[in-house]
Length: 176
Image (tube, rainbow, N blue to C red; front, side, top):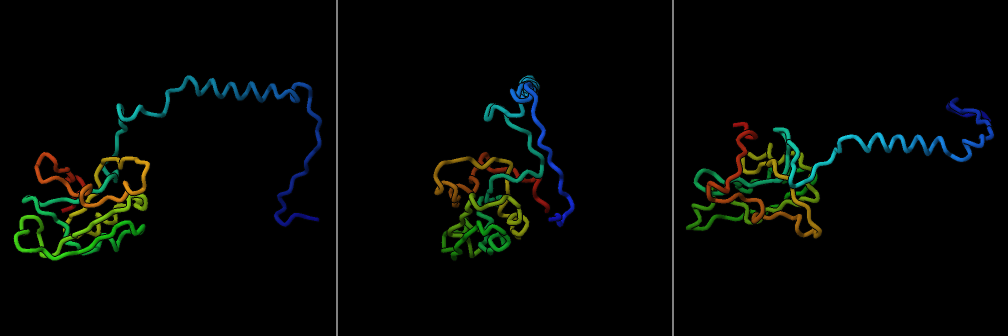
């Protein structure tokens, strides 16, 4: 029967020599490759003592920014959650109460804001969709853990500190 792709090859039943039967040339060739790689410079780094240089456009761990007065910028509009292709962002909006003017910029704020880092693909679409420039992806590497619950980042892990020393500089990522 003829092959449909016309790529068939005729296989010969060739007997191996004694040297080929002992697989000695293959073993020597494998040892040569091993020795060649043994004397090369390793591609790995001794993390965390040594850290790799990242480009300016690297997208790492998320941060929810505060304005210059220390109030949260997020107004719970939901555009970041809608634009997320992995559906990793969930939020619950709430109304600002009297006396909370210094905590939130607008009357509406995100009472619950969570990012499931196991689902996040670090695409940066949430950052582009936010009209208030409230969410940014920093150069920090998202830490590893053994429990799934630790990868759901709430506002406690996302919102930057109020003090100027705890602020994260994202000026290179801002477009305004």
